[in-house]
Length: 349
Image (cartoon, rainbow, N blue to C red; front, side):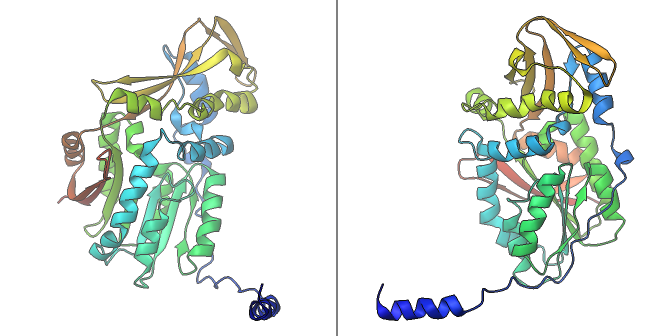
C-alpha cells in the first residue's frame, strides 16, 4: 500500500462509522386474532387424514423450517418462477410507479420476506411520496426477516406487518382506512386455489377495492410437462424436504410418529386442468399414531396424501377468470422467455 493510501486508511479508521438513517415511522405490527383463521392446524390434520383420499392443506407448509426451505426452493435452477417474476418486476417497476402516482399503500398477500417486492418499493419511493407497506404472511420468521431488512433499506417507509391468513389480515388493514392502495399477490400463489375458489377470492378482493385501487398478480403460464414437473421436484430434493416437512410438523405439534424415511415426495402434472399436483406417498403399508388427536392413521403401500395444487393458466384463461371476478386488465407484462405473467387490474364498474 502506498503512503498516501496508508494515510487515507488511517483517517478512515479514525472516522466514526456512518449511522443508519433515522426511521420516520416505528414499525407497527397489526394484531390479528388467531381465532380468525379459517381452520387450525390440528383440525385440518384431523379432517384431512380421515378423508378419502387423504389431504393436507398447503397453507400449513410455512412454519419456520418450511419458510426457510421455500426461500431455498426459490433459488433452485429448476424453479424458474421466482427468477421470471423478478425479471419482470425489475423491468417494469419504474413504469408502474409512474402510472400510479396516487398510490399511497402497498398491501402484499403472502409476502414472505418481501425480497421481490424491493423493486416496487424502491420505485414507488423515488418521488418522495408518503408510502406505507403492509405485508401479510402466516410465517412470523419470514415477516420478521423482511421487516428487519426493510427498516434498514427504506427509512421513510411506514411498515404495517400482519401475521395472518389473507382474509383476516386484509380485514384488519382495510379497517385502518389507508390508501389509495396497490394490492400485491405475487409468486403465482393464485395457482394454489381451485379455479372456482380463485374466482371467489378475486371477487372478495374486488369488493375491498375503491376506484383508484389496483391489484397486481403474478400468474404462471401453461408450458410443457417436463419443465413444470422439474420445477416442483428438483434434483437436489429441496422440494421433497419442503413437502415432507408437513409430517415433521405433525410429529412436533401433534405428537405424531411419522417415519419420514417411509414416505416420499411425488409430483404429477395433469395437463387437462393445467395443475401440478404434489403428494406425500407411503412407501409401504403402515400405521401412524397421532397421540394429541387420539387416533391412528392406516396407509396402504403407495397410498398418497394430496398436499398441493399449482394451477397454470393460458392468457385467455387469466382473462376469463379475472373478468368473472369483476376485474379489468390495465396492463400485462411477460418475462423474455414468456413463461410467466405480471398482471395489473383495476376494479371494473
